[in-house]
Length: 168
Image (cartoon, rainbow, N blue to C red; front, side):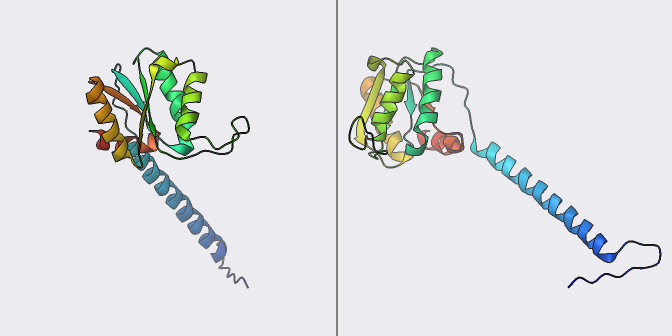
C-alpha cells in the first residue's frame, strides 16, 4: 500500500522521498566507483623495466593466454633474449589431439611458440611450484645457476603489486 499526502502548492511526499533515495543511490555508486578505482591503482604496478637478462611468465592457469601474449610482446620488442616459464603442476582441459589433459606449462609453451618465440629461447623451470613465493624461490635459484642478473616478471595486472613484493 502506498500512502501519499499532498500539501497546498507542493509535490507529493513520496516524490520527494523517491528523489532523495535516488540521490543517495547515485552517491553510493559514485563512492564505490572511487574506492574501486583507488584499489585498482594500488594493485597494479609497472616498474617500467626496459631491458633484462630474462623474462619470467608466472603461472596462472586461468590467465596463461593473457600472460603469454604480454611475454611475446616484450620478447619481440627486444627487451629480453630468454623467456622463463614455471610449472604450477596443474592440468588444463581435455585436448583431443593429445588425448589427455596437458599441463598448463605445456599450453604456455605452445602459446609462446605460436607467438613466434623460438624453442631455444624458452626455458622451463621444471620444479613444481604452488605459490608466487615458490615461483620466486625457483626463479632465484635458476637465475643464480645461470648467472642472470635482471628479470622482467609478467603476471596479471591485479597480481602485479603482490608479485613485485614477493620477488623483491
